Structures are given as C-alpha cells and as structure tokens.
Image 1 (tube, rainbow, N blue to C red):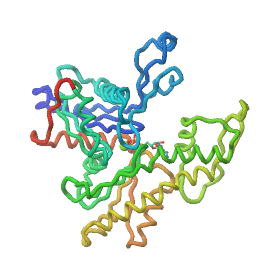
Image 2 (cartoon, helix red, strand yellow):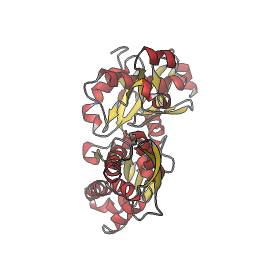
Image 3 (cartoon, rainbow, N blue to C red):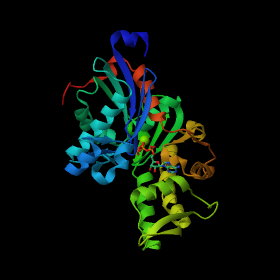
Image 4 (cartoon, rainbow, N blue to C red):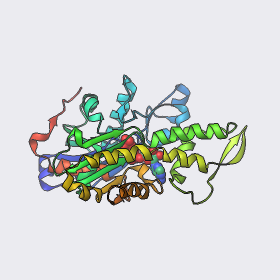
Length: 344
Ligand SMILES: Nc1ncnc2c1ncn2[C@@H]1O[C@H](COP(=O)(O)OP(=O)(O)OP(=O)(O)O)[C@@H](O)[C@H]1O
Ligand SMILES: [Mg+2]
C-alpha cells in the first residue's frame, strides 16, 4: 500500500474470477488463490461433523460428499437463475478479501477480470453480489487484464485458456473493443467432459468421478505424439485396475486445437495488414489449460502457413490475471470507477 493509499484508507485489489480458481492481488503485496467451490453442509449430520456453516475452496472440495457443493461459474458465466450460485460468488470474493487482510475500515477499489463475453451479459449480476464488499468497481475482460499485467499492450494477441472459456484479445495500444475479443467455451471443462465420455466408452466397467478425470488430465495432458503410454488406476467392481488412457487423453486435449487455431487466425487476419507480422510474433498463451504439453508448439506450427510467428507460454499463470487487474486498479483515473451501493 502506498503512503497515499494508507492516508486515504484505500486498498486497491485485482481479482481474477475464474471458473476453476479465483485469485487476488492487493496493493499491499498480498496474493491468494482459491478453488472456485463453495459448499453448504447438506444436513444436520454434516453440520455436526464439519462444525461449519460454509466451506470454501479446497476444503469444500475435500468434504464434497457432505455438502451441497457449488461451482458458481460455468462456461464463463455465473450460472443462471440460481441464488445459491450468486451467493457462492459473493462468498468466494469475500473470502479472498478477508484472506488478504481487508478490514471494514478499508475502502476497497476492485478491478475484476471476467471472460470477455461475460462483459456483455453478466456484469449486472456481478455488481449486485458485490454490495458491501467493495466500494468502487471496474469490470474488465480477463485477457485484457493479463495483457495489462504483462505490459503486452501493443501488437500482441493474448490467448487465455482456462476451465470454462478460452479468451482471446488483440491489443492495439488502447482499450480493446468487442471486435478485438473472442470467447470460446472450448476449454479445460470441455476437455474433461470429452475425456469422461471417451473413457466410459472404451472402459465401460471402470468407475471414476469427474474429479479423478480432471486429475488425470492435469497430470498427463498433451497434444501430438505421445511420449509413452499413460496408465491410471481406477476400480472395476471395487477392484483397483490399471487402464491405458493414452488415446483418450490425446483426443480430448486435441479437441481444443481446431477452435483455438481458427479463432487465433481469424483475429490475426483482422489486424491492420502492416501490423500482422508483429502480432503473429507476439502471441501469448496463458491459463491452466495452456500447460497442455505440445499446445504452444502446435499453435506456432499453425502460424507457419501464415508467414510464421511466435507463441510464448506464460510459465506461472496463476496470478497473471489478478496482478494485471491490480495494475489496472492502480493506474485507473478516478472517473473510470463505478461506485457500488453499500448493499444490493
Ligand atoms: N497441467 C495441466 N495441463 C492441462 N490442463 C491443466 C493443467 N493444470 C490445470 N489445467 C486445467 O486448467 C483449467 C484451469 O485453468 P485456469 O485456472 O486458468 O482457469 P480459470 O481461470 O479458473 O477458468 P476461466 O478463465 O475459464 O474462468 C482447468 O480446466 C484445469 O483442469
Ligand atoms: Mg481464467
């Protein structure tokens, strides 16, 4: 926190509200990340065991069998028409603010990054749930906050492949417009769904949960040629059994290739001709799904046909979104903020 902020009692925060993980970075140097899950004990037995009214993040995930568990975002949007999901978003943001030591005396100015498409439809819902948590708010698109944080503001293309969405944004040295951005719902969650289907089809006797499938994917995700067989263990009628899921992992992960490549090329083709080469050489890949082995190389290969380019992967994608949102918060002039009513 700067001396000026301390004097004014103002704290600037950047929040990346993600489908699978949400993170916060604050102007006094705090950073936290939480799995985007909220759970309420299912009944009086669960309350007795858990001794809590609400569980958030990993703790909720770990105790999921005793909970009414909510992952409030889906395909980039807050799930429609569900009060519990809205409440869950509020809990996640409240939890992040509390963890980073925000006190009631603080006046919090928050920049929140959301998927590019959500900007159009979901903003109002987000404003409504933030009443009383923050004083001033700015909602920006996720890939824009990433661009800002990496200082990739001119002639760059950001591709952020998360869980619910893959977000694209071409930076032209000014606020990106709708035209400069795209959101696809092909991302980590859709890979998980495919993988579940493929494994069920090829190994119909094996039982597994969506969480197991996600763990397998996160450990082994790849596109292109496999490095070796991928074997995992799961029960068949209660008996732990080893299965080979190399082909299934490959096809599930490769389902991202066509839509991501097409969108990348489409956005590049729309850049003013004299800058296209520069943008092609400044493609930045981030988000958890960008960790898929071989993905950045495959995208780079796709650029060859168009004159070649460079796709750089952000090594540690956890805080790039919230760090970028914080950088926007610190730079934003007073007129760019909207006041949040104390209670919605
Ligand atoms: N090593 C890995 N290989 C492939 N995928 C991974 C790996 N690690 C995490 N993921 C996937 O990345 C996704 C989470 O990424 P990220 O944290 O960027 O998403 P998010 O910001 O919560 O989602 P969104 O931006 O869509 O709202 C999940 O689908 C997760 O399974
Ligand atoms: Mg994200």
